[in-house]
Image 1 (tube, helix red, strand yellow):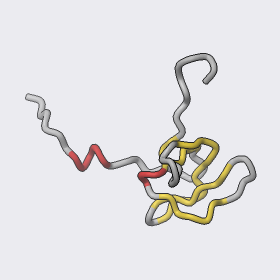
Image 2 (cartoon, rainbow, N blue to C red):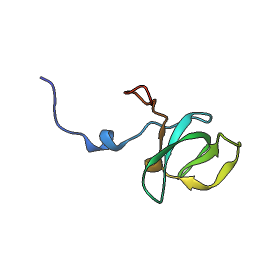
Image 3 (cartoon, rainbow, N blue to C red):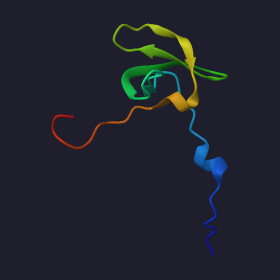
Image 4 (cartoon, rainbow, N blue to C red):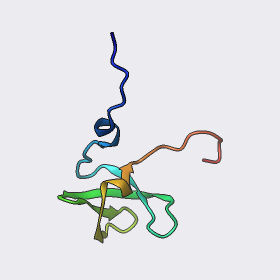
Length: 79
């Protein structure tokens, strides 16, 4: 018999992102996801993020909830 019980600890756990992984970052102002970043370094409370356009490491530490592996856009041709 398969256990179908919901395990909240597994559902909220995210995989750790390695240095150099292309990521999307959530804007703190409007909550939208922005691309064009990579993980500069994983730290205790989240990640330091590098902007790809100029190679700058952003001064803030971004939490796990504000960083996700980059998602490729799918759908219509203009994406």
